[in-house]
Length: 65
Image (tube, rainbow, N blue to C red; front, side):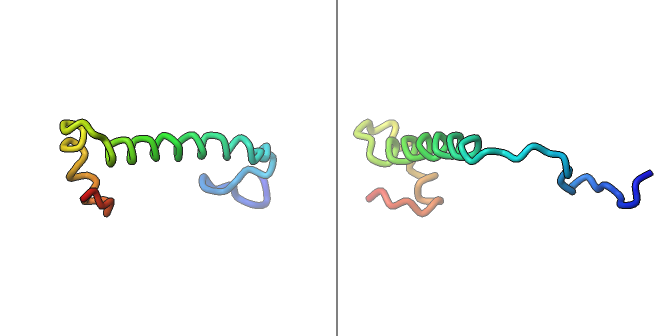
């Protein structure tokens, strides 16, 4: 048995460090998708798309008019 207990939330000392690109690329992709969805719905000319996203934009504080 080891001298120090291993807790579930504690990082493993032998874990492989994650490269910046392994975190940055998914974060940029998610931010890009979010921007496309937000501004695509926010500035859409289709009335149905505008109305479908209207209430969620106001609850998130995004002004649309």
